[in-house]
Image 1 (cartoon, rainbow, N blue to C red):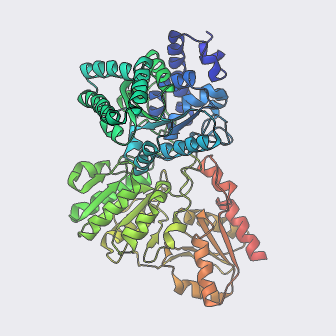
Image 2: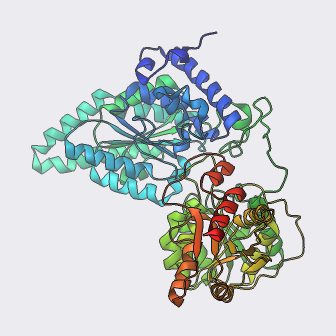
Image 3: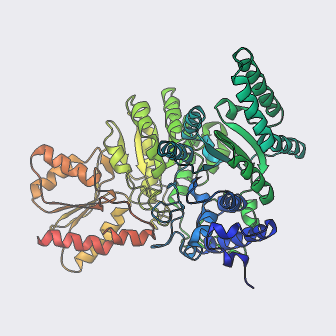
Length: 624
């Protein structure tokens, strides 16, 4: 049976449809999103929750001339489907396919690239300021999920936008608040009144008239403003936004297309900073996602009929090993605390939060605050472990330096999803942390080669009191090493020689250690025997070992799943340069580029980090 969606090639086609037809299109889009995400993985719950809103926005606003900025970008699946990418949507998050987030090089309708939360309001304000400078008249809309409103950047953007007085519409997509029927009905009536043309024309006329009567103009305007704010304060939570300079409207049902069309049409004709508050249901239309929106926030492939994940590995993930280990440590040490930024489940901390609720802190999407908050805990004698994705930890760099490292506080930074993360692509690859962490004075930078070493490093970090520590580990399952209760002996700044050979030294860090071992086995079949070293530490380096290598005169190859610029290999070269004795060094890592989206195994192959490629590079270095 032919779908109405089959006739939608651009937003213009939506404007030809009736409300009932738009409602049908909403359900058709939900079906396609579920189908693609069940096959490819992706962010399901948030996208299912904004289908009607997205359709209404594209009916009322003229995209791409008008600009819609999605915060966070994983709400944008419907937007992609109805802006000419329906067929390409099947390639979502695949190598060579479309991104799971807005991407300005992908389509002109993607006004701004957004992969991390809380950026949309600031970006939209920049677009609005540029519009005003150029004298054009396009509308600027920022769609912000309620989670992003826990981010400090959102508040900075709101404060600046409200003070600027520029024409900008911020839509707050609230999928947590419970609105009672009476409050909702009353507030809907009030929104009708204050957004309708007659009210705003009257208000404008009164404003103009009172402007000609200086003696009474200001008092009358003040009274009118107070009356409107007081009415809204009785029934809606909008006065806080009004105090920032926004006119507040809502809350509105974000799944009622007819209502959304009506209110957006009204708001399109009102000038100044506006905030529309809507409430939606995450995962709407797919029962399993409605019941467990968190699990389907970001998901791997799953069986659509059951909602069950299609698992590629039965091995425990590094995140779960981190979570279970930190729980073990906390049982014996009452000072251990866990801090995360809206990712308790995905970092493995949910069991900790249940067993030690007073020592667990989820601060929301506020990574900078998480770091400074943890620094305060450490200053007061606690031992905080801060678990945040590597790519998100980038947002807190100043806090790491100023609040933790400069004061030499024993905060442990646990960087989950370090290295390539696969299909989420460049906004989420954690490939900069070795570079930005190792340059901080006093920061211990570590990376485990397998699950057991992660456990041992966490125990080492729990006992270490001489300053901050960074431990990075990858997304997904471990290396199939048998988990053991016996801890590995970790000595500060000391590497581990895993294999001896005379042809060359291969120094690897973290997940690249198993790859280097496999590469050495490939080379051994060709009669090339190399020494393989698990460096463990990027800062401080094992300088005793490096001095031995320099004396040997043998080729040296470093391997890291990190940017070469400023990374592990750079640290080794800097050490030798400082000694004035530089051996032949080959650095294997990620070059000066943003890696795209693809399976992690494919990305490792592209950038020469798989065992076969490492073996080829080592062989060339030996034969040079």
